[in-house]
Image (cartoon, rainbow, N blue to C red; front, side, top):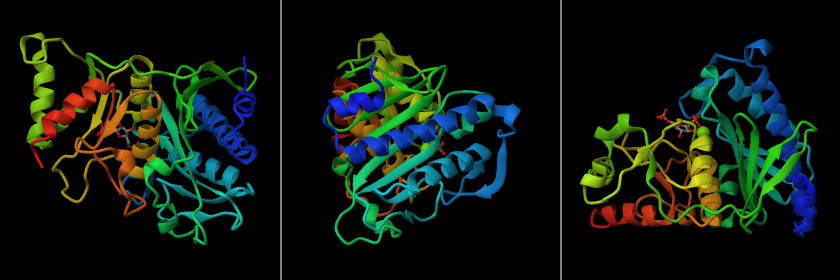
Length: 324
Ligand code: AHM
Ligand code: MG
């Protein structure tokens, strides 16, 4: 079985990118150890710190963020990092080629109940003469990503990675290597499974309510098939299911806060997951257009997300086509 490094080199990936991806994985291994020890290491529970998103940080949010920051900022090729847990980006080497954008521990509301969480990352190339301590340096469309991936900390720690040539899956072994388990993951085109937080139903747009309402009617309704529902409330785990067996995952726009189009963040969650899903033959959308084509305006910008099996995403978009 090939290690991540061997796999990337055999695919002629650029040396600095290989080193950078290996360093991200070194960080994820450190995070996996902390997660495994959990209460034994005293790392569960919340702090009294609120992040820029207005959310109370878990101890492990801070630990995971520090691990990634420490490991990435001493690499020559890293020009800067931006994290969901930091107000502002941090500049690295001014001669570096890459920017790393990450959500250090996504789904962290699940940590204390011992449910899967994950690390999501996105790698961009620096545009000329930019100050990488300024958010503007990171405001690139998702299509400009050089690589993206996540590590799911579940019963096993699993990396799903794309560098723009398909999505490949690696599992963390006892020896500490991420070993190749599956090349070119493919999301089935059609599905009978959806993932959404149903408790927000009353806040969704009428078109989204109509679409999900028809899924719930099952074989008795216009969709003529029965749908199953899953919601782990950990995007990495929910998207991993979609990549593995198909499905549709949604965190759509809702009217709880008109200034926030959805809960998820474009740069840390929407873009990397959309890149992965498209590279695995699926689609991702805001319900109205491709997430990867959005011109970001703010580093912490929110986005409405729907991604997964191609036919189902197309159907979802048809429900919304008449709305705007
Ligand atoms: P986080 O980055 O603060 O952990 O929030 C993102 C998470 C996603 O992993 C998940 O899909 C969503 O929030 C769950 O939200 P909810 O608790 O509203 O169901
Ligand atoms: Mg997150």
